[in-house]
Image 1 (cartoon, rainbow, N blue to C red):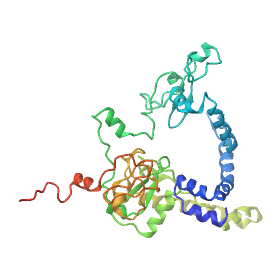
Image 2 (image 1 turned 30 degrees about the vertical axis):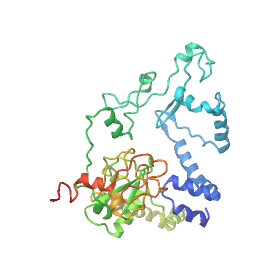
Image 3 (image 1 turned 180 degrees about the vertical axis):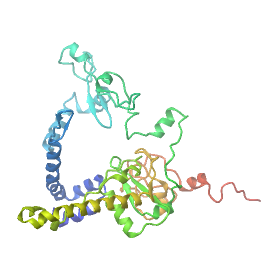
Image 4 (image 1 turned 45 degrees about the vertical axis):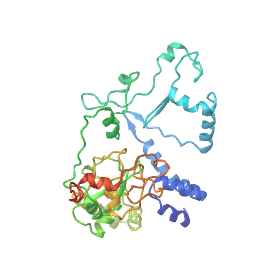
Length: 366
């Protein structure tokens, strides 16, 4: 990747930002695809050597743009393109992790075409089931769930508290596991956000005391090596090791192990130093996350945290989806993007009154 593409990539923090910049700079997409080929082949080789219950893993190349365009043209052949949305609602089942299509089987249906297989085979075909946990805290097998109606309520990253509240008004609010109340001051003590890998929304990190520059750099380096999702707590993340590149000097020593006896004598010593370095890194991360916390009560459907805006050190993003492409808003409104502008924005003054402002409950004597 050339220097120009490197500079453009350094300004991006999410996939949406990369896509927007790639639209203005076509060369960025080609450079990015070329630079990713080496790690893609490396990961493919690693997984090709793995096996689960005696069955080896299989890897498949990603679809090319030509194949995607051809597939889209095939989809549009379904009756007419103007009935596409009606077809999706009638014959398709869309979930977070899968998408399945099944005709209704009615010969008089005007949306999907008649089936081409036998009726006996068609009756044995069903939509893919959603994951459902059993009594032993393990997920029920596919064979038992196939053909039964399921929902996404048990999806690991699904915590739609708002939807559940509309359906059942007796829901309880999930409380965070932090030892203190999250606030803008405690967020400014860290000054670093972590982006969700699924919804790409920025989530605040809190600390009771201000972090040093060294701790902040170590924290940011660690966050770059993990995939965070909303609702995740960093208590169990402390045991993860950071992958560090092998220094060139050490790499040369490893290649020249067979040249003399001195190299063979130094091998255990280098191994001990490397293990000691890894242990020190784990201890430092564990100690760091004993002071830094994230609000694990949020889900991907939750809005951006209010202290994000009151801290005044982070760029303005849409409160609903976290997009940087926001519209001009009034001072007492939270920012929204064009796609989320139809939602009702909560007034900052109203929010302050709800949380107990200085003037709450006061009355002026006349």
